[in-house]
Length: 224
Ligand SMILES: Nc1ncnc2c1ncn2[C@@H]1O[C@H](COP(=O)(O)OP(=O)(O)OP(=O)(O)O)[C@@H](O)[C@H]1O
Ligand SMILES: [Mg+2]
Image (cartoon, rainbow, N blue to C red; front, side, top):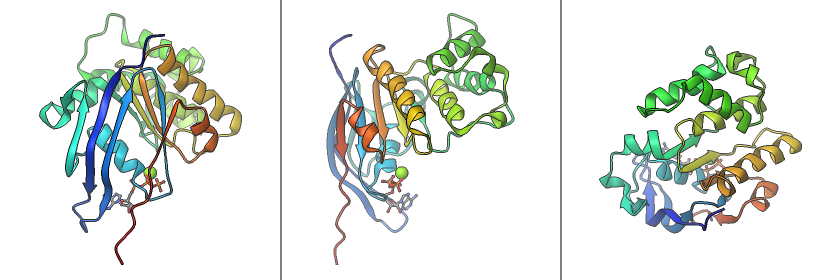
């Protein structure tokens, strides 16, 4: 295990949606390090998903900066960032149901434009092992998988191009306790054994307790 190193920083970030101009995040500053698992908590509507969109370069802050590896994201190629440096696990997985598990993972490798030192299918099978799915699942269609299994595939896909930062929106939302614990053990291994920075949005006190650090997002008070 190596020392936690700063990798991602929110520097006085605020965000308002253009539609309605409602300010969702206000003056958020936080440093995220590799080797650590972070939980972002807070009530519904506090801006957790919005914060993940900023971290993952899907949206730009209205004020302030998101800094990755010492560089302002606004001054980098955000497509490059999204397809190389950060792996995103969406709440609704966003897997392609008609394709197989391996095809879904390989699609994201292809999109990254990276070169791989092994056949992509072999890498996909190795990733399945990492998320505790049997190798036979590689050829199974997403359609035939349970919610918990799809969650694991979504994690495998997020890891496919070996990103330094992994973010997940409510990754244990609909899972039983044993599966939730197992998914958390996978996230902890990604941070502690592979030196990635893992950021999870969660409503679960157990997930928060199993993280290294909890960032609580308070809801903004509206002016009367
Ligand atoms: N595209 C959008 N346009 C306008 N307002 C939005 C948009 N997306 C979200 N919001 C508003 O921003 C606020 C924060 O939303 P966000 O999805 O970040 O909350 P959250 O903390 O993830 O909530 P939950 O726990 O319910 O997922 C909400 O009031 C929401 O209605
Ligand atoms: Mg949300």
